[in-house]
Length: 461
Image 1: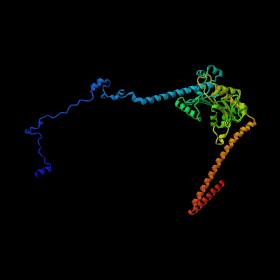
Image 2: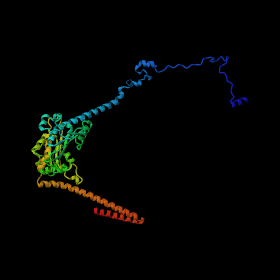
Image 3: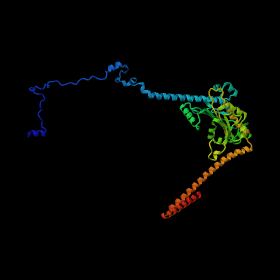
Image 4: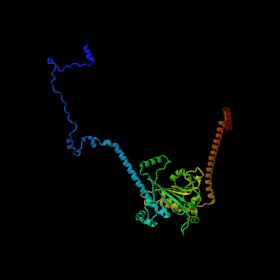
């Protein structure tokens, strides 16, 4: 009973000795053994002195040596194969871009160097910087445009032509009798992107609607056509100088409306499909022209007037570099409104750029004749009444079609407006009716619609 009470109330038990008695001979006596000591562990990292002796550069630093800092020991060239391909691809792209843009700029400078004498001879303003001093044609032929530009006699080619994109260049000229302005655009290869050139060539090979990439010059000339006072308004001139209005009265720059063209047969079909004005003409070969070009005209009398010996010689000199020479008063796209069908006269010329190996540009004669064509048109492009009647009839037929389309569109608009008003009136009536009145009204409408459909079926039968 006393032991139970002591256990319940936490009485201390007597401590039993763990040392075996002397009489127990089966156990070794460990009571007198010394306490065990922890074993010494040698440091894994080398000593600071050893590191400093091996790497003197790291003296004063407590960073231990590790292989992580030596990249050449933990990597191999195989680990950078992907990066190598990317860098090589970027290097090729940058190289082609620099080479392509530089080559295109060189071609544009060579082109303006050969055409600048013709432009400067015919126009008062060429390019975007103007002339510092106008050289003669003999000086240009003797010294060359580049040497004259270096001497400061004329401005550099950079001021005569502008770069609109890496493959397109543009120049402008104005200040000539019978000519309001002329715009010239150079379309060159995308040398900075060989994949684009290859893709366009492949697509053009399989599809006729896509033309193969060609380096060419496209010139657009806008004649005054008797509008000098509107295009170049001048209130009055200095003493002794005639005004634009007086000059326009003295020399009439207007001429009759017509469409006429000399076209390379390789692009004849594409040109007829792309341009509305060419679709008004009739194609006919001319015995005086080479067999690779054809004449597209509205009248044989126009061809007899414009096909002069100078033009025939210029066409023969240009060879197959000539794509087309067009005189037109109609828009490129088929007009859909009456305002778009108004006559807007202009002259278009497209010639391919000759290779760099050509010593003389064979397209210069046709380009010079193209600039002087407005003079010939202003002086003699007035045809007999029979020819003019035929030309007017063609344009009136086209205008009549546009008027009919315009009237049909207006009739449709009036019908739609009338139906809308009728529907609004019906909705207002229905809202004011009772349920029974609405039912009767809808039944009457249904009967009327049924009778109309039956009448239509009987008419068809």
